[in-house]
Length: 287
Length: 131
Image 1 (tube, chains in turn red, cyan):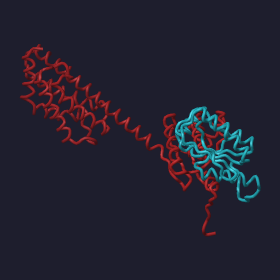
Image 2: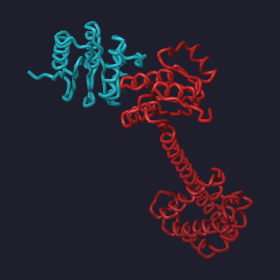
Image 3: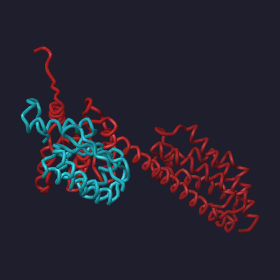
Image 4: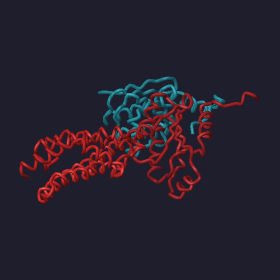
């Protein structure tokens, strides 16, 4: 890459920065990068002008091939933050990439006008800029993907926390409502939480409610049995409630031995049994 | 030699394990308990393991064995105050201590023992057996 080309590109961008921006802004809605439902035009203009400005600065910095070089650092940062905010807003990946790629058209237009009849110079400049913008587009995608993954990981951690509340139904009676699919990791957390709570509150009875568990396989059943056994070792009785007709059929079909565990169809009947075990009863005051 | 003290409380024996169990100590405890059950004619043994933080399969087996020995000697065994981590470990080791009664604390363990005694002698009308 000759030095004069570098200078020329930068010069064009500096001279026509505002025109380029205007033209780009005009074209972006057509290119589909402006999601009016998610993004205001002011925001897009701010992002676009920052991009053009930093793109020019990066060109002035020297390295026109490697966007991981230092002169591209500010531009990379701003692209990363744009990708992140779009990932959070729910913009699609292609729309995010299109943001960078749509800059090609106004830029090439301008280059053509500047080079006039100099076909060789034009081809060279177009090639350099198209490679650069492609790389930047890919970088945007990468950042987009990364922030999406971060969001997913955060949600997973939150789910794990949310999914295992142990509630006290009555002094001496704990209930753990299980919702969603049970895997070994979750069951481990469930078991630990439940046992911890049993020792904290000195509860004699724990009800495991599986109304929200969509399916029970041998593994889940085994985890349940383990939890029940551990609770028994600590001196608490475990009741399993919320067994749907389908789950009852599956369990019998699988040949899982749940006969050692007290099972109830509904949480209400489990609570009733628990209260009676503690020597309590619920009465209607009117009678 | 190091020994775990065995306390007599009426018709019951109370053992509180407050040191790290090692195999020798467990063996001694088992011997001592068997002897005391016979000597005192005890009807129940209560083992408090609330300060026990580490167990292995040997200790687990010892607990089960003490329970079997006591049953033969006509005494009920209740293990009380097991820590959550200990319970998980024992279950993972595949030892659910079948036949050993458990309770959350010494108080509840005593209740179980008294109830089982009451049923056998017919003294307590309201008592119902532990299922």
